[in-house]
Image 1 (tube, rainbow, N blue to C red):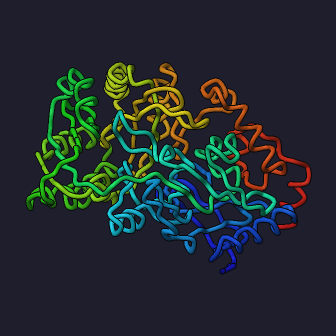
Image 2 (image 1 turned 120 degrees about the vertical axis):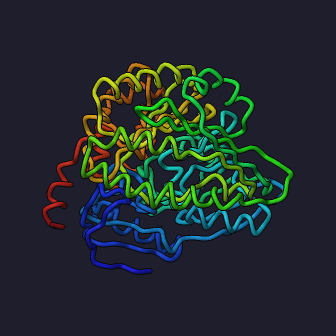
Length: 449
């Protein structure tokens, strides 16, 4: 265990910064539980950090920051039940490698693998595929360290209501110390990417999302072009693609794109030309590899992001409205619009709760103004019952969110029961959940500061 004086902390995108009073890095779950109980009883406030890949101020704190970087690894495997138990701080990339060594894999992943498993499920992280849910749907059990320092086992059979709340909880119910995941046999997949017109893509969208196991597309603003990506299972041997595909993934999508992005930051009028340059550079690529190596791609160019979940039937209409909005407002944006698909689930705070979903994400290069652009696009999402991704920037209020989530008040009840003093809440979460700050907290804040 390590307890250090807090230093300036920033998330990946630089959108959130804070200076915690202390950083706690427990080495065992027992240490974690003891510390949480100790700090909780003394009225301190705690947030948990994984990879810092959320764009919202979920981790921001001036008190105790708990790092799970020493709680990593694969604890057990149950091949008959097709489950594994993994420590909460385990990075997704490391987990993919550990599972592969055992001939196993997660059934789906997002396009970034630097997050911890606890952080990824807490914010509703997802990949793409109309027959696949978010990463949280892979969870079949959780070990939760509560505000009192108790270790609570949750599953569909043990504490089922808490389990449904904890599958996507924003870290407000306690610390997720262990996760039991449903896994599948490691399998080879074929990735195919190509350039296509936006009109053709949208006209064939239903067929693509049904016929392709994992389908997504990226539309480049101010152009008629998209990059389509699909991944399907195959029995063919591993083939990592040609030199051009590797060059495209590493050099064009990161190194050259960083140079283009810097040019856009310095000369915003260059954005429209940058979109055309990027669209023309889309290569037809094909690669066969194991799933955990294909789902994710390197993301070295930093940005700000807003992502919304909408009912899948509104995908074409929303894309057309975004297209018209960008053209009308002439936003200085060169990042593509990312479009993915997710199966409905029954998790209380999951944006995919009870609806087959499309996810649409907009990005802005770090250092470029994004608020006016995001706000305008968010207004479109609102008209289509949009629910924000919890780890991405948004401006929704507690009252609006309560109308979007049928189990919103049930989640609030569970949260208040497990953490009545709100030790796992920060200022951002108090506003998000409309929880008043107790009078006691003000005096504690003064003592800490």
